Amino acid sequence: MAKYNGKVVVILFGSRARKADYDVFVVVEKIRDYWKELESMYHLKPRFLEVDVVLAEEKDVINYYHDDVLTREALKGKWLHDGLKLKEKLSRVLKTS
Image 1: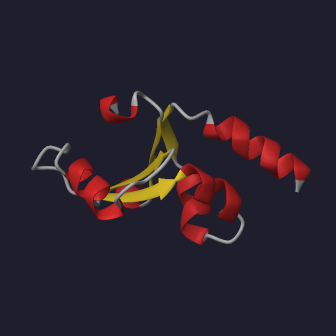
Image 2: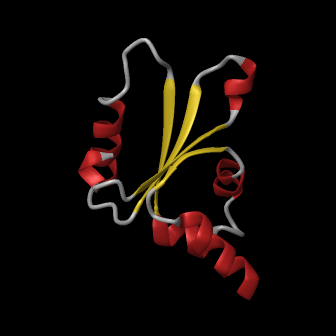
């Protein structure tokens, strides 16, 4: 999160309830190089943890929330950090739609 100055959203979601891997939804303001960003996130995790990371850009989450099943499901998960105030932004978007 230091790389993003705390301006990141981290949500735990998915199959962890069944003792499987951790599914983590990460939202950042802007993605410069998707694969490079994703690789750097995988290097942050301890080796013994099985983690699947879904990386998304903030504008895409807001603009395509209604059309993307994975995003909708991930946003129902446990919010660990909301440095982008994404919940507030989404609630405003949902009120106007």
